[in-house]
Amino acid sequence: MTCLEAQSNIMDFIEKKLPDDKAGDFVRHMRRCKTCSEELEIYYTMIVGMHQLDKGRELSSNFKQDLNDELAGIERKIKRSKRFRLSTFSVCLLVALFGIFFLYENTLKRVYDAEQRVIKESQGSSYFYDYFGDVINITKEDEDLFVRYAKKEHVTELTNFQRIHIYHLQHDKAKEGAPEDE
Image 1 (tube, one colour):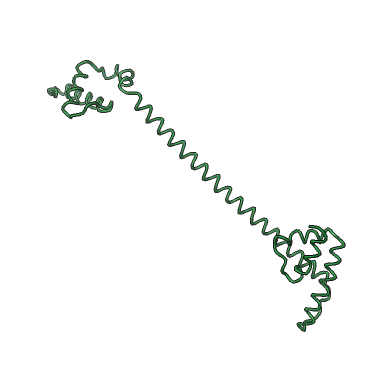
Image 2 (tube, one colour):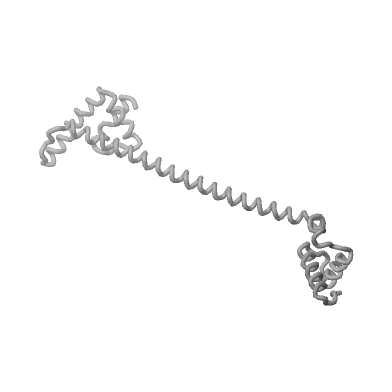
């Protein structure tokens, strides 16, 4: 703020009509510029003294201290406002970071689940033959059993889980000595 701007705001300051957006610059200028500070002190003493006389109050004994108290009050108000804005920004930033982290974790879980589903779907029959063939000994008869079961259930294709389930049912019956299903 220039000296001319500061001096044009003296009356607004004294009458407490100085906008908040100009108050910080005004106080900083008055603290740094001796000429403007002296002019403010003269106007403040005259106008505040006249208001006190008009209202029948006792005149202040130290107008300079009263002026410094008002300037310090504005400085405190500006500092509180800055702290509030900073703390509000910090809280918003933390909430945003937490939200981003939560969304990121959720997205990773969804991607992982989708990848696992695609892997399971792409494995198909060869997975079961390659990895479980030695354990469950799927034979041509077992394949025929799967085909008969699919026809019986009116299904065009069995899932791998259905195949394993049928295999276990069939071999459990064979162990018990029950006749095989057709």
